[in-house]
Length: 146
Image (cartoon, rainbow, N blue to C red; front, side, top):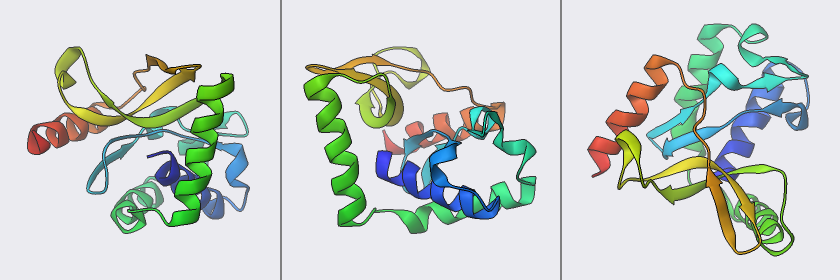
């Protein structure tokens, strides 16, 4: 999921004629068809990304996500290297990884969620800020894949 997140960041950056490094967003759910971008909390240059990109373009970016899965070998290798580094040395950065949910409405599901990683693995699973629509898509994806 971290590699998919990088691809979506790059596409969003192209839309605003910026750099993917400046875009911060989270992909959660079950890629490819049931992945959800947390557009509500996405930012670019410290501002909400939704204020920079019109809703119809956000919808178009979301519609392109299934075609971005599975990521290519270089994207996977880059994501794996960053995760391995975080496990070995710790990191303050947050990553999207597949996790088994242990509580809440997603209990028992394996979904992509933002996590904090430290020596030894996942320290904490984080709940992204999702709109009602995004939350519904995520919960329906979990129900379909169970």
